[in-house]
Image (cartoon, rainbow, N blue to C red; front, side):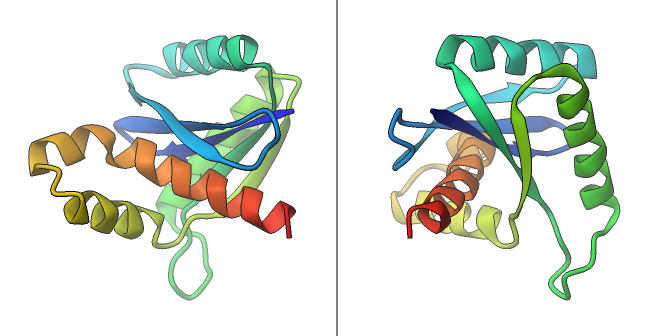
Length: 137
């Protein structure tokens, strides 16, 4: 059973997938968003190719736990996933994942230009790994 982690933004969607034993998350790619149809098509291809049974969608919350405009967009996107694919869809608190991803990339001395290309994929990896760690405790 493989899971997929998504970091959904306005311009990109970061994607990570788990190993077959659901222990380790690995960044897969960053989708440059053009339109929703293309976004869902690519996600569907990955679901089929990687035999995904569960999608963990990062839910951006405000620090006080409320859901703002970006969180509402993400919930709407997740609803679209539920309507299109026969996989379990779970929302996961993603507060500070992008900050953590940025720090990791900076500490690895990745240039600003390269960070912009992979930050969402790395954030998706953090989202999925935190979910997997929670499930394996």
